[in-house]
Length: 464
Image (tube, rainbow, N blue to C red; front, side, top):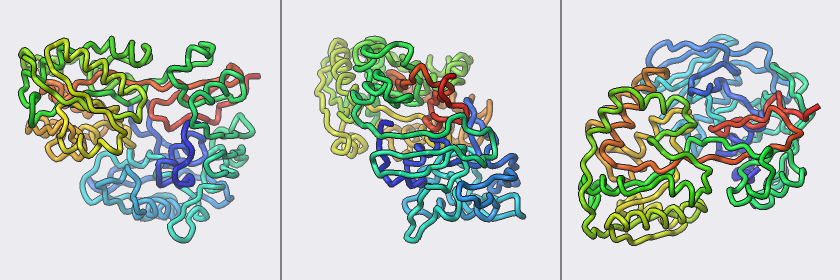
């Protein structure tokens, strides 16, 4: 695996995604490829009113410590997450309470209407754990406390972890007797482990290492992550929509993909990429196309000076900045480039101190839904509004999308909001990233999950 645990595998932190990828901790709900809710530890659910949902629990489920899954423990587990400090990211801005409803159901309530409650409960940070996981002082340990087909038997800090098959799993029993996990932050070392056969599954092979590995060991997975050029719509050269249009029309996305990513990325057609299977189809409807026709006409750059920023933490971004500088200068802009570590540049970017800023941005957060990302980046009150963008029409479109239950109508509303944002040239999507996953030819049924929630499953096993 790429990164060691940051919080001792505390499931209320981002370490929860490791537990999910190992199939040791489970949630009430899982998401399908479209982001729609599907059964897991809950087999059925119903919205009682705008703020209240009832979830029926799967019968016969045991925790890894031998205790049964009960409504009381599900309520306790979710309540612990809702009251944690810091709270799980999926509950930002959400006041959630849980109570039992008999012995086989829980009722989940929110302070405001929330059509995404089932999707929120799919977040690995809301995994259901046994009472034994919750220690004094707010410590949460997932060792022998989940419900998945694998038991987390031991965790050796930032070095390794060991998982064993759980004989009493409620679903399909694990094909493998266990999983040995090692954390290897060095990309060259991960690639070598795949190449030499010392690892069966390897996360995140660096692009620069791919040429040294047999092609049948490499699998590219599209990510819900877009490399985007944010343009400052409030001050400076790009306060003028026609100058923003000039920047957009000067950019050669294909050249950036080829030079900075060695062709291993997807040219962006919108903010949402191929990891969201429905996005491309939504762009074919007439309303979407008409919105894009309202873009401003490009004006000559005329020697306008702009400050272009990005950060070094993602290795490709400085190269993207070089490519963009060349393309913008060819269009007549005079470009000053600023590149720093992210921790030293984020505050300036959010304060609008750049005319343009390149960011690799996750477009679906823990709910599997892009509305929260769009609100954060493009609404008047957005907390991550690098473009300093505020438009009443866009805010209304985002509000409409947020109010619609998950499904086809919500997806169409999200696409309509995307089209409006693009029509204002507040941001220029450049490319959609992929992660390169390594798998030996001796392993089968490894999950290739754009959301990075699944990797090892019950079916994963050695060939033969």
